[in-house]
Amino acid sequence: MAADRRRAVRKEPGATPAAANDGAQTLKRINLAFQGGGSHGAFTWGVMDRLLEEEWLSFEGISGTSAGAMNAAVLACGWARDKHRGAREGLDRFWRRIAEAGKTSPMKPSWLDQMIHPYRMDYSPGYFFFDLMTRLFSPYELNPTGYNPLRDILAEEVDFDLLRRPDCIKLFISATNVRSGKVKVFDTSELCVDALLASACLPFMFHAVEVDGEHYWDGGYMGNPALFPLIYACQSKDIMIVQINPLHREKLPTSAREILERVNEISFNSSLMREMRAVHFVTRLIDQGQLSGEQYKKLHIHIVEAQQAMVDLGASTKLNASLDFLLHLKGIGRETADGWLARHQDALNQYGTVDLVETFF
Image (cartoon, rainbow, N blue to C red; front, side, top):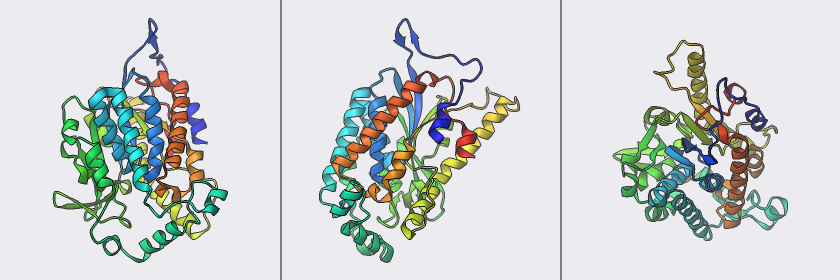
C-alpha cells in the first residue's frame, strides 16, 4: 500500500536528523496543503489538532480547497490570535458549529445504516431523496434564494482583517472559474466569505458563487489542493499534504453509485497527480545537475493520510455532519498524525518522505 511505501523512503545522502540540540527540539517551519471532501475534512481537523501540540512546529503557508479551505482559514485565524493554542481552539469551535448546524439536516443514517455501517447514509430516506433531487433539478430550482448554512458560520469564525496582518500565515484558496475552467487561487489579500464558499461550491448543490464579477465552483476540479502557490510564494521547501480522497481502491466499482463515486475521486485527485509528477520531473533534473539547485527549489514532500479508513467510509458520509462522526474522523486524524510524527519527525526541513514514482506514477 501507499502508506507502506512512504514509510520505506530512505534518507537522502548527507541528510541528518534535525532532532534536538541540548534536549530542545529545533524549530521547523513547513507549508501545508489541505484537500477538500465535505465532512471528511474533520480528518484534517484531527491531524492538525495533533500537530499543533508540537510547539517546535510552525507554518509559513497553507493551500486549501473546499473543506480544506475552511480548515486553512480557521486555523490561520486562530494562529494569528494565539499561535498553536488559538489554532486548535478555532478548529474545535468551527467543527462543533458544523455539527450543531447539521442537527436540522434530514440526511442522517437510517436504522439499517447504523446496523451495517454506523456512519454511512446509503439507506437513508433523506439522503436518497436529496441525491435524486440533485440529479433531476439544479440548485437554482431547488434553492432559489441561494441559501448556504456555512455563510454565517464562516463570517463569525474567520476574521479576515486579522488574516491580512503581514505576520500571519499565507493562505491560498482554490476555486474553479465556471466560464474559463481555469483554477483561481485567492491569496490572503483577496480572501472573503464568498471566496471560501466558492472553493466549496459543489455545482449540483449550490449556486455558483460570484466574486468580483466572476462565478466559481468547487476548487477540487482544478486544484485539490493547488501546490504551485506554495512553491512560488513561500520560502520553505517542505509541503505536508493532508490527503482525504483515496488514490487507490482495491474493489472494482460495479454499481451506478460506486462508479460515480470513483469517477469523482479520480477527478478530484487528478490535479494533485499532475503537480506531483511535475515536482518529480524538476527534482530529477536538479539531482542530475541539469538544473541549478540555487535557481530551482528541491521540495520535501510529505503526505499524511489514512487511505484504508477513508476508503471504508463511502461517499455518502461526506454529507454526514453528526458530531459523533466528526469526532470519529478527528480521532483517526490524530492517530494518523501521531504515527507520522513518530516515523518522520526528523525528516522535516531535511528531506521528503514520499516516493513520488511509486505513489503518483
